[in-house]
Length: 326
Length: 259
Image 1 (cartoon, each protein chain N blue to C red):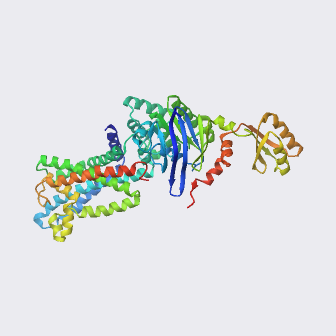
Image 2 (image 1 turned 90 degrees about the horizontal axis):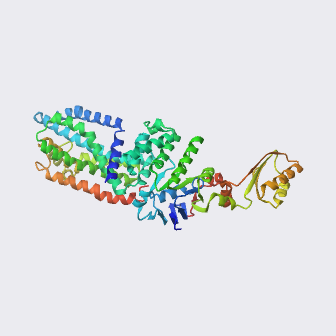
Image 3 (image 1 turned 90 degrees about the vertical axis):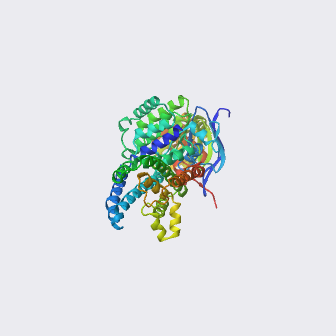
């Protein structure tokens, strides 16, 4: 608790009958990358907006860097930087003006400002586009400008909302490295994302949100290890799996659960995957159900999400946010 | 203070992006003076035609100052549409600095815009007393800041771009028509005592009178020849919308009340 740089106490935000964030209790430690993971509509962005004092909580409170978000918003804003989910830039501006002004308002000296803006724009391959108007940039380029703000600012607490949305694969890796460097330079990073892989590889700890509520919070490894039958094996068959074979598969004492992803594709959650896979293969061969492919994997945060919510992240996204019954 | 200046700087930077708007407004001014002003001045008795023409040109300058100062409110909706308002609210700038800065920025940029127009006006009308002109010109800053503050207050209060547009159109119709920008007070009085009463408390009248006093068109001033009353009126207008207004909408802005 003493190392917490951010604490939320029953933090709640309601928009009429929609409960965007529902009594959220979190403690984020100084110097960590803290992943807020959940589908669209889980309440991640609303949480970020409350913690950055852009919107006011309906109920509960939060302390950011030792300051109360309700009573000391000016002090909070001096500590934070934010990369919004959607780039917040007027389309008539150009990248250089946007970033240069941002650096100025965040208190960077002239020399520091020029150096950092140039360095970050070069790192993001945006230097040659610095004089182009925003409306002439692609969605990915605009997103790079948005993240450049926080990378130039190097705030004590950085809120980064979906940093690699619309960014190509090479760009994603570059941005992930830059986020790690930001953490290593002393910033605490709150990473809101619906990309499971991104949350997994970047976060020191992850909080999974669903319908505005916190489902679970821990290190990615602990979360994965917390799943009974942590390993998984995905089997693609050449024909539909029968009920009988499914029952036999479930009867293995190492197998904890079996999920039918498609009629001819299933995923088994199990322990000691290396030992039991040969026996599973034998079962399918004996049952005359040829196996097209088999993929053995450790659990991902996707599995963690399924475990704690009962839904895949895609299905949860389709369900949407929580609504109060009137 | 430094951040306040940066907020002002941003608005000035933004204004220079609207080159098309600036050019169109300048054309509008030229058309008003070259067509309407010249033709309408022929409708008055011949010996007063030139006086009315000068009177009208000075009035158009104030109309331009009013309309460009209002423009900051439209910027707010443009920013809300692009989400830039949320960005501004997340910056290490107090709400007071943000709103005050924008109000002052809105005022200064309308001055940048009307600078060349005032120069043309001085060329057309001439300048009788430079000191008077400087006093009047300085007081017009208060008018511009006040109008910008009023525009921001209404924009934040309404939270709807369409409603803002409609309301500003209606407000413009009232505030400009019930002032002495286009016709002297004596004629307003002839038309209606109520109109005349409203005209005398209208900040646009104060600004028009002051500007005319500054450039030496003292004939037909509403409150002639003392500039003190309009200066006090504009000061009150400036304080009302820049300080009292700031406090009111600071509360609305804090924590996303504008949404």
